[in-house]
Image (cartoon, rainbow, N blue to C red; front, side, top):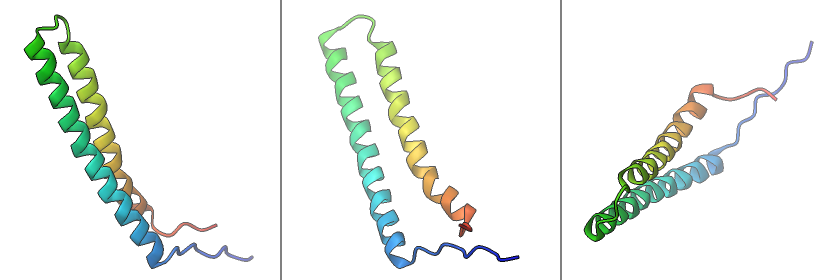
Length: 83
């Protein structure tokens, strides 16, 4: 019985994952800043009923932050996968 070789992407894949992690962090911070700015502008203008829209946009930004921050540790936990 032949065992499948394990896939080892090497140092280049670690570099790409590191760059993607920094980009995800920058996008998360940018999303929180944009959401906060929109919340402040709409509050200043007195738009009624916008609190649910604020919470929905804030929820999606925070959900994206959680997905981006847990992707790397999940991949490291799985380790080298046999192909």
